[in-house]
Length: 220
Image (cartoon, one colour):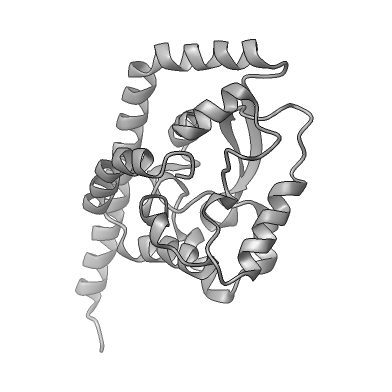
């Protein structure tokens, strides 16, 4: 099918408008959330410092849109001497297996997790500092799960489409993860989001996030 120049320009303009609206919504919602949640953020910081030694925030390099690396912020939920060997092994096991392993990206049974960390993980409160990444333009309220670089050796060619959008605090995979049977299905949900991305879809997924956190407590 051939498209006229006017039709192509119209599609480009529509995509650009959608991108501007999405970014505007990201800034507005993340700013509002940071202000509204300030007492909770302070309480979490105190709990973390009281429970174990080390910084309040955990910083980790993740891959964003276009596979560009960025530093992602989370509340620290593990001991400061924890390495990533267990997580690397879990990613490998899940990528190579045909069975579902829900807790691969966040598990309450991880021996590295502190007492305070177990609680904030159960309710996904450790993710709240992602709001800073959203303000910086590295993440979005809604988008694919932020990837770690050691996932890439297990990627099939079509997996890389997930990097067409900024990673999200929530997203299609995060909301529907209980129905994912294997790693392929998990990535397919991220790719589907990049193909269907719109402000209306974002609003729907935001509305579904809280019920999903409650339903999938500890594994969202």
